[in-house]
Amino acid sequence: MKCVRTYNFEKNYGYNKLFFVSMMTTMLVFLLAFSFMQSYYSKPLHANGFSWFAVGILAVYPLHKLIHLFPVLTYRPKVMWDRKYSVLPVVTVITRSPMPKKRFIVCLSLPFFVMTPLMLAGAMIMPEYLHYFTMTAAFHTGICLLDFLYIKALLSCPKDAIIEEDLDGFEVLLPE
Image (cartoon, rainbow, N blue to C red; front, side, top):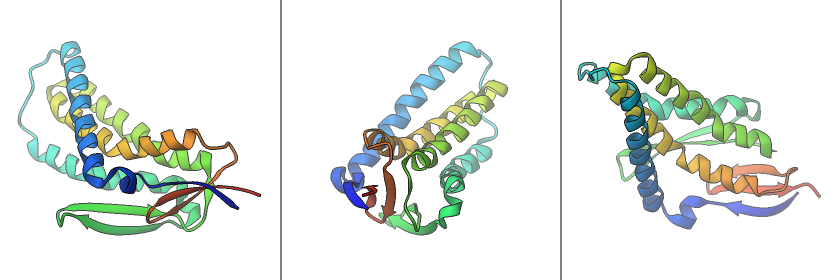
């Protein structure tokens, strides 16, 4: 195998910059989704149920990581816990063997295409809690930002590329 490219966005851009862009993405998605859905569904909003919202927000990140695991279970993934700034929990999933580019893209995109539509469907089914569902969907989209950056980078890689993960990001390999 020949290494063609190595990607590590946290090293290239820094954790703070990625966190800031993620927060801006979260706010933009919330503003757009809430504005659009509030204009379509004109029921009054309810403030009760905040405890369910808090549980939902806290469950988004672990569910996101769990969904990442499904396409790579055959690759025996390794799950590691870490903390940023002593407060933010960070879960890292690393596969023990290289995988094809298409499967890696599916692994990266699956949480967005599973969780976000469910949250937006919840907003349509219960429009009185629209603000909670759109906040949760926006928060999840912000979490997905790094996945989108990796997908964008992978789309420019050769079709037969194989992806190998490590703690510092991932490497794009080509068979010789």
